[in-house]
Image 1: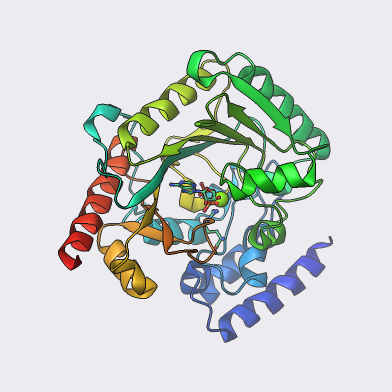
Image 2: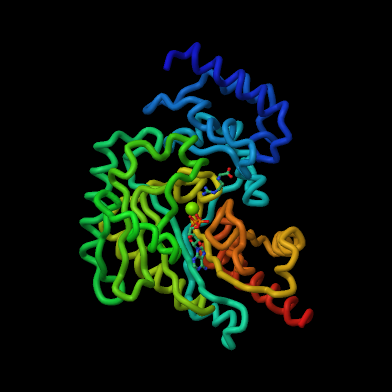
Amino acid sequence: MAPCEILELLEAGYQKLADSDSKSLLKKHLTKPIFDKLKTKVTPSYCSTLLDCIQSGLCNLDSNVGIYAPDPEAYQTFAEIFDPIINDYHKGFGKGAKHPASCFGYGADFPDLDPEQKFILSTRVRCGRSIQDFPFNPCLSEDDYRKLECMITNVLSTLCNEHAGKYYPLVGMEKDVQQKLIDKHYLFKEGDRFLQAANASRFWPTGRGIFINRARTFLVWVNEEDHIRIISMERGGDLGRVYERMIIGLESLAHSLKFSSDSRLGNLTFCPTNLGTTIRASVHIKLPHLGKDRAKLEEMAKKHNLQVRGTSGEHTEAKDGVYDISNSRRMGLTEYQAVGEMHKGISALIEAECKEC
Ligand code: ADP
Ligand code: DAR
Ligand code: MG
């Protein structure tokens, strides 16, 4: 697309966003002076533009955030808009802040959140990783997707013991098998409009797939939103065991794959909400009293730096009162602290629920 066309789309998109009642962080922080300063910039290696970064938020005015990094350099080239959004989302990660060195701690420090199994249906801990020297979705060629899939699945095939399993490419997967895996919350959904508008679904389903261990408690997503999502999950509330399983899986992959990171931002990901630790620890939980009013539940959760999602993840509704509640902060604290915030917050919600009983 010619620079003048890009500029036209940006000016029109910016005006539409400015005139809208969007609640996105993009709308909140993309002031006219910042917009004017960034609208002609491009990243050095991939020539990514401001439009590449914000087109999802311009198309989807109901975005919570509305911006992605098309390549790792975008966080630097477009820092004037990424930094205030990062600071806002991660609740205080200012320009001078530096993400701490990794510290996973020990799963044993996080006892079962619901030993009597009254509230929590299942627990999941995931992190994301990007492979060094590759850009993010919008800048990947079809061949890049194939190369990434080959690099990652070669390492996955060496996993042993509890983590040993099989890779299932989306190419050639029967639609009913795919839907069953999605319905069981193992596999990512298809056709996420936020990712599509961000140009993150090109050449779909080439290079995309899921690795599943024998017990279906350790999963790896390949080339969905990030190059890799490393997921541990099981029924019940034993956060410590789920967390330990994810750590072991991540460390096994880290022996053979070089991950993309930044001295200030930590692990680099497509979306700024996942930078740093990239950790999201969540429970599928039923809170008969607190869950009656989602707005009130979200308000209470926010006080504990928790985020409430629907039963099938973000941008979905809760079915049968089952919410996905997780830590929202992923930057400016260690993995151990992020999981600790979730453990503390979920315990507080369960305590509040019991007071209503
Ligand atoms: P992520 O940030 O990990 O990509 P999403 O909101 O996109 O999360 O949801 C991805 C999938 O993970 C969805 O199917 C969602 O239902 C599932 N999920 C999240 N937390 C849990 C949990 N504790 N137990 C079972 N499935 C979960
Ligand atoms: N859906 C986009 C991204 C929000 C964060 N979730 C991610 N990265 N999956 C939005 O702006 O709402
Ligand atoms: Mg997701």
